[in-house]
Amino acid sequence: MKKKVLMTLFVLLGMLQGAWCHEYPYLTFQSADGTTKSLSVESLRMTFSDSQLFASNVDGEEVFDLSDLNKMYFSANVSMPVGDVNRDGFINVTDAVCVVNEILKPGIEDIDLVAADVNGDGIINITDAIMLINIILK
Image 1 (cartoon, rainbow, N blue to C red):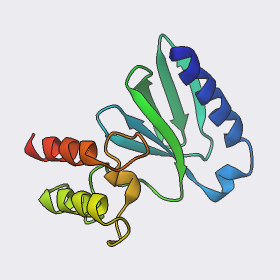
Image 2 (image 1 turned 135 degrees about the horizontal axis):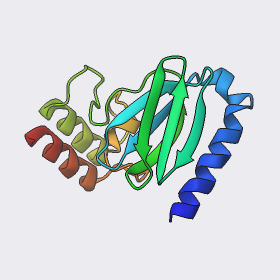
Image 3 (image 1 turned 90 degrees about the vertical axis):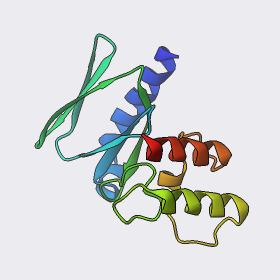
Image 4 (image 1 turned 60 degrees about the vertical axis):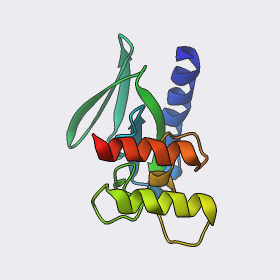
């Protein structure tokens, strides 16, 4: 598993040197609990040491534990937190209702599909709704 994660990270690192970084100025890291951190790709450098990813740019350095890193993706803007489905800046019951509505009638509401995929498996389903409710109740 770690070997697969490392290979994926190296591929992404290679992409940073390509044209994609010009279209997407942020690289977003999502942890297993759904929290996200977006970093500008400008002068972004990534190194690995002791099962950790060190990402630094002009704004500073972030450290990610590889065992907790769920996914990384390029984005056009700073990501809203996973769970803020309706993009209002808050994670609350309204977001959970939006997820349920998306499950029952996909595409009926204008929502953030990345934020609705709380567990990051690429599918919006009841698991995401339950995980979002657990985040709200914490």
